[in-house]
Length: 183
Ligand code: HEM
Image 1 (cartoon, helix red, strand yellow):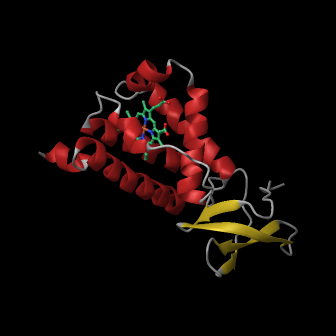
Image 2: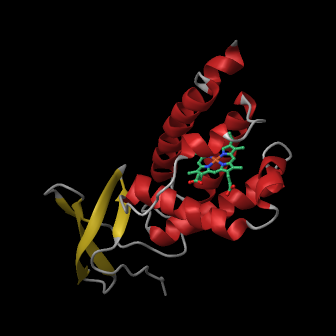
């Protein structure tokens, strides 16, 4: 029996590069749940395909954000370049950082605006930050997204992260890291 994911009315999901809110639930003629969603801040409504639990997901919701954050930072913690930067600051206490990152990505992707921090300020405080760390960070992000999500969703999440990483490095290092790496 196929397993289907359930969404509550009002849940936020990210699909086809756009955040939506679940507004209606119905059953397909095969009995599987399907959901109508409305684009956030707009009037466009559409039906989502029934989201299967087992496969790589086409749709991102809050539990998907938690899953990718946990998987991504498990890789970061083990990485020879990035792991020590975190270890010096969070000393193995990943819980609060993961919670902050779930809030950050839920704000960026699902427009749940509960993140109250400043990434530029947080990263300016990391003296050892280097351009090659941004490159590595994005490689791990790309790998994680493609492990968990179907390619179009994985690519749109990666592109969003890459844009933020470029802005962050321009702000913290003075230039986008790609230009610094080429110099
Ligand atoms: C270049 C590689 C990077 C390194 C080594 C790095 C490292 C860190 C560290 C050590 C912290 C502080 C953790 C703590 O004290 O709790 C942090 C916080 C954070 N990082 Fe990064 N980071 C990197 C890139 C990025 C990128 C590309 C993004 C976004 C796409 C990002 C988003 C954040 C956010 C949102 C926070 C929380 C800031 C706050 O306290 O509100 N980081 N990062």
